[in-house]
Structure formats: C-alpha cells, structure tokens
Amino acid sequence: MIILIFLFFMVLLLLLQREGFSLTSTYSTQTILAFTNYLKGKSSINDDAIKNKIDTYEKANVPESSINAYVSTDKWPYTDKFKKVCVEKGVDVDKLTEPEEIYIQQLSKKYGNVTLSSLRSFDVMCKMDASGNSIGKGMYSIKAKDSEYIPNETLNKKIPGFTFLNEPCNPCDILNNNYDCPFSVPGTDKKPLLPDPVLQYVWNI
Image (cartoon, rainbow, N blue to C red; front, top):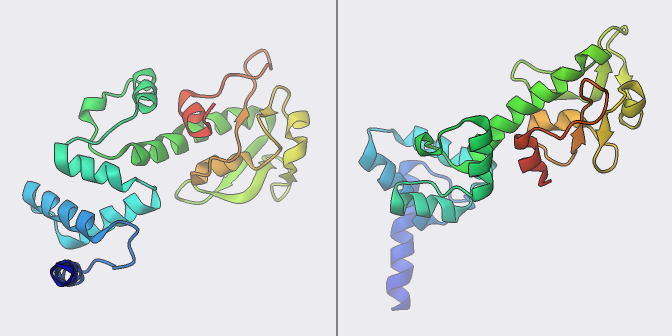
C-alpha cells in the first residue's frame, strides 16, 4: 500500500512537471492537478494561463479549500462579509467568476485610491507608479518643491479630521494591498467619516 501511494504521488509530480508547474507551490499537487483538469474541461485555456492563475491565487492568499470547493461545485465560496460588501457596492455576486480574495484586492485598491484622493484638497497626495502602486513612505505635499514628505504622525495636524484608527502609519500602503494601516478621512464638516465598506472589510472593523 505504501508503495502504491508513493507511486501515485510520483505520477502526479511528473504530470505537473510536464505541464510546467512549479513543485514549490503552497497548494497540494492533487489540488493543482484537479484545478488544471477542471479548467481545461471548461475551455481551451492553455497551460501558461493556468499557471499564471494559480500564481495569482497564491499571491492573493486564496485558500486551497476555496479552490477545491470551486472544482467540486463550479462556484467560488463567498463569505457573508464579502456578500455584504457586494450588496453595498451594487455588485451581483452571482456573476462573479474569481475568488473573494482577488476581488477584494481590486476593490481595496480602487476605493483606497478614491478615499486618499479625497484628501487632495488638503494639499496632500500619495506618490504612485504607472500601475497605481504607492512608491513613497507616506503622503507628500502637492505644492511643495520636490513633493515634500509629510511625516505620518503629523497628518492629523495637516488634515483636520484625519484619524489613524491605530498607531500612525503609512496610509498609502492600502494602494499596495497592505491592510495594516486603518484610518478615517474628514467629511465635509471636518469630522472623521466611517471608512468605506471595502476598507472596513480589509481592516476588519
């Protein structure tokens, strides 16, 4: 029996190697092979596209259990918390075709940018590259020469109503899908607003 199990795993590894998949994946060989066969059974997707999809899921920390559930049911398992965000954003969950974690990455970057852009009237901005990722250590003055850096711990003085929900940190990190810096921005009356529903989700508040 032990020999048969060993041979089974060896066959799986050889199949994955032949398909060009890395053997250092955090997902089990059984899951990768099942997911690969499932996708190929649905469409004419090529091996490179499948490999890229798996790599993307790993980077987004999509649980292996979610992939297995998708292969078994043809539906991604979405949490009630995520469904609530979708309702608030007018997104039809039944039309979604990717894991929850992928959409949250996209939405957090989008609404993080919207939230931070609302601060431009206070002469502050995040430095971003062409992909919309933050490339600075915090927020910078729009008008100052060479976009002078504004220390994170002084942002609440620069922006009346701006509040860190924990310790001062880099609010622009949300643009890099880093969820360790929760904050609220001022409303029209300069009092802190409740963060956007998407940001509440990723900040777990």
